Image 1: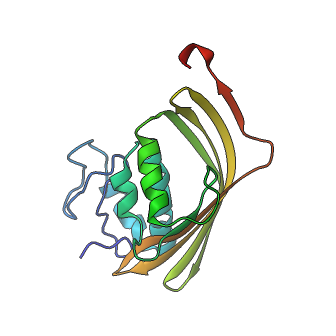
Image 2: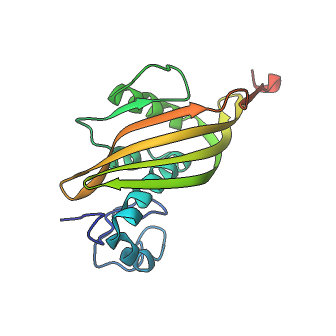
Image 3: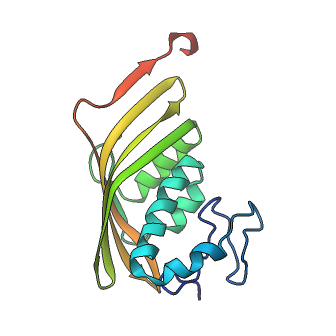
Length: 178
């Protein structure tokens, strides 16, 4: 069984490709997975890995990689993009559609804190991210809280809450592309 908590890394943290527990390098991108497998013995590092894979899934525009990190039976989300009410899997479907038109996504995570409560964890951090969707450039700073639970030996995301810092977002329509 593939588990994040047991030192096995089922997906490459660089490209999201599935890897075998015997692999030292990702067959798709060549990433040195052996180097970080030992770190995943720690629940803290396992949770951190899921959180970073979640954000990397956005950057790589890989909706499938994001889906693999979610507990689909219990997932909910408050997003920093409309609609602002609580969403379930419908929010992930909207995100998958948005990923198709996302370009030039960059991010920086700061102040990452992970609190462990047995088979539950809370990750909180701030993120500054920017990119382009269709003809809209964006630059956003948000606070993020992610709740994870251990399901079948793997850490899965059950809730995300993204909220923007007031007045920070800057949007610019490029009239050339309208």
